[in-house]
Length: 248
Image 1 (cartoon, helix red, strand yellow):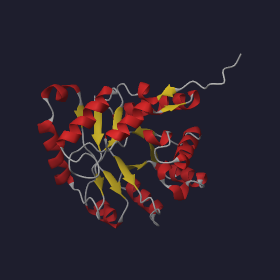
Image 2 (cartoon, helix red, strand yellow; image 1 turned 60 degrees about the vertical axis):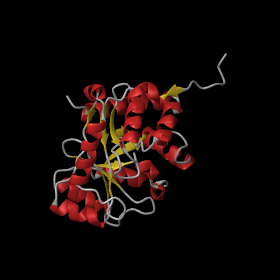
Image 3 (cartoon, one colour; image 1 turned 120 degrees about the horizontal axis):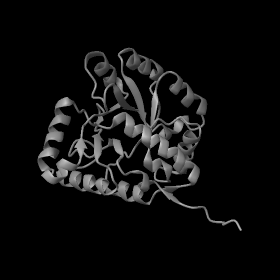
Image 4 (cartoon, one colour; image 1 turned 30 degrees about the vertical axis):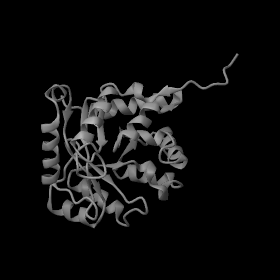
């Protein structure tokens, strides 16, 4: 007799050894951890899930978080000084940035080196209200300069929700996609969840990140579950994320 209940597969069970390439655990620098005390809480909670490698990605957003190599470096140093030695020996933290594609980004791309996830991978994001009118040109410029653009949480941009073919076009011109773990539940809304699962099914997702800003996010990740089909797809993407960004 077939069971009417669908087995739950908890995403937390996939996170042992996970390299978290998108999080906001650096203290006092954006809308993530407000201070080192909060940073330590987030890191310890994520360690409890099996995560040992962190790439913090504070926003670089000129109007709200005008971060630089210096401000990120200072926050990183503050965190290192607050981390107990025992924890420092068990984890690696290599900061990067999450770049908003605003007018200031054009200046940075033209005149400065970018803060990359690893190698030449650059994490980028867009406004949730509308995409840059020159998005494809920005991606082309990034590629021309040797960078590999990784678009953070493509599933959260509602203006693309009915444009699956445009997602495919962005992939075709060389933009990789990073899915947020919490998009696989209803944290950002049912429409985001639907698109996230659709992008998974279409094999358009390249990497996974937590995008953790606070403890509530971790609580929800701990409870997050999907069906068997999705968990098998996620296993492969998490493996790719780890293989690409792990520090040897």
